[in-house]
Structure formats: structure tokens, C-alpha cells
Image (cartoon, rainbow, N blue to C red; front, side):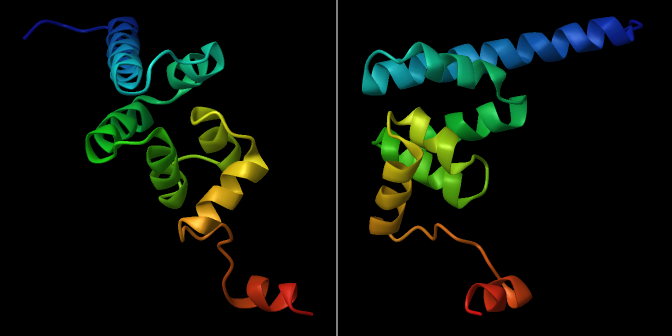
Length: 117
């Protein structure tokens, strides 16, 4: 088995991340048309696990909004990032999420009680 240095491991990891990002960008473009540069930049900045999850979500959904809703619902992206992914502002995205039945607030116990004081 060949010896792999830490630098080689980092390079390999970055290569995997870049390839995964490029694949997801191609999938998004094919399904939804041209992407905003900001969206492409956000995909490149995502950790590998999130890029892979986004790619898997794309297999399940036929709408960029639905894909963003799923990522937000599962806590994999913030409402702001999800909104930008589908070309909406944060507030507009939260309204869409609420209409789709996706909880926009996740409070429990004392945090929830504090909101009603």
C-alpha cells in the first residue's frame, strides 16, 4: 500500500469536493437552467457532505424550491441560504416554507414558553 501524505489527503479531499460541486451544478443547470453566480459560489463553499446531500435531494425533487425546502427542513441549510438557492429572499422563502407546511421555527421547552410570556 503506497504511503499517502497529509498534503495528498487534503488534495484528494479538495478534489472530491470540487468534483461533487461541479456535478451538482451541472445537475441544477440541466434541471433548472442557468444558475446565478452567487448560487454557484455557495455550492462550491459547501462541505462535501452537504454537496452530496444536495445531489441526492435533487434526485427526489423536481423543483429547486422543493429541494431548498427539504434542505432547510432537515437543518442542512439556513433559511437565507435556502432562499438564495432558489432565487428568493429570506422572508419570501420563509413564507413559502410556511405555505408548504415546513416548520419555520424550532422551539421546545423553555424556549417555547419564553415566546409566550
